[in-house]
Length: 139
Image (cartoon, rainbow, N blue to C red; front, side, top):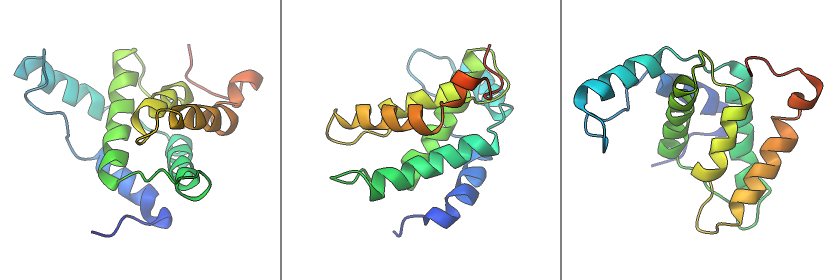
């Protein structure tokens, strides 16, 4: 199966956000709790700037990191859902740049040192606004 191209990644993520992916059998959660979490996460907004950061990170990991870190479409979609759940459980209505730091634990592949590469890229390219106050929705 051919991977979604960089140009199509934004549309792919928007489509993935409309799908329900929280399983009815998460360990430790009842079916009712899963349903509540699924419904709540679906209402969490993922701003365009966040989707841009995610798609740019995916491109960077494939093109600039050696060996390349390949993010499957499935992992890309699941990561966005994890970010929604993280924002919801933290009490926010929108995914913010701080939530993106979770990607360092989701996207590294085979070599734990890749986590640091991802973290540094996120700090330099998506979270730099924390220092000048340009990032919104961070309490």
